[in-house]
Image (tube, rainbow, N blue to C red; front, side, top):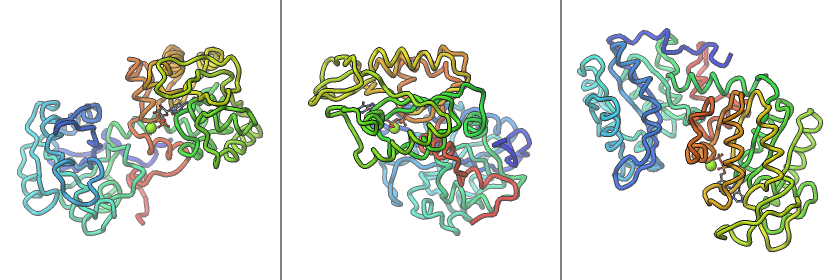
Length: 402
Ligand code: ADP
Ligand code: MG
């Protein structure tokens, strides 16, 4: 099991202790306010559980890319205010992420008290995984919890370096990270079959690793989105002016060969919705897999939708990464919406990995009907590629730190 060797909150003793929780509060901001608090709400169960158990919490996160320097634009202060509303308690905000005064303030909080540190990436030492910075962070707390799956693929001071300073019985995965591992873990093993992967989105190059890792595991690989045109080119099909990554046509051909050798069936679009520009008010169906010169494909066509939804409706496990078309524009949203609906209506264990795919499911009001929507875009892909994520390895008993 993916959780083997990783302590969860069930067996973590936190009463009367200061717990450092690495959270993912990298939320969209607008006009100095939190524009979307999904990520904050996603951590509330972990924070509530720890507070109820009598812990004092020090929360650490990054926000955006401040490049190692303080800047008001990337301050976590507004996040602290929103979190206070969500938790229904005061959240102490530490403008300095570090220092004795912060440590003292954290220890002086009442049981259940919550302190949020300023953006850790205001210090270049965070991304540099600097040893003394990591040590200083560790000194703020007695126990370490990682609940930031979205940054678990980075070996930073707060996700990796500081963890070595906590004994094995004092480091654990939060509820969100535990849930991610419980759902994503089986996908890189042998989940219930038929196991179907729905891969789309903008680029083959972003997804090569996961495509290769899933070939041979999947019963069927469904390909859509702009990525499909590079695959069609690899089969010699003309695709007009659709987006093709010329330098990856050979990669696509190789993936098709691997899939066939390992008995994974690959489905490519047999028709498309095309237009002369992405801004066109409507698209036209092609009837064929080829696309005429001057036209570009922006969505899968009706015949393709029928084939794809039929496969998905019979699946036992579905992993979906990458929209089937330019779903942000209504004329090109039907393919993505139809697939999302078919997955939601199936009896499968369904997992979405990928920020835009999750946004699409949300936009269609279907997100709640998936078994799991991963909070980590890049992290979930790296995990499925079979790589060990540093932020997860660090939690494992017996891990040897670099
Ligand atoms: P995710 O974030 O779910 O991993 P990606 O980032 O790979 O997905 O891709 C999402 C983007 O791909 C969307 O913005 C969508 O508009 C774009 N896209 C999908 N199909 C096409 C297409 N046929 N042509 C151009 N862009 C496309
Ligand atoms: Mg994306």
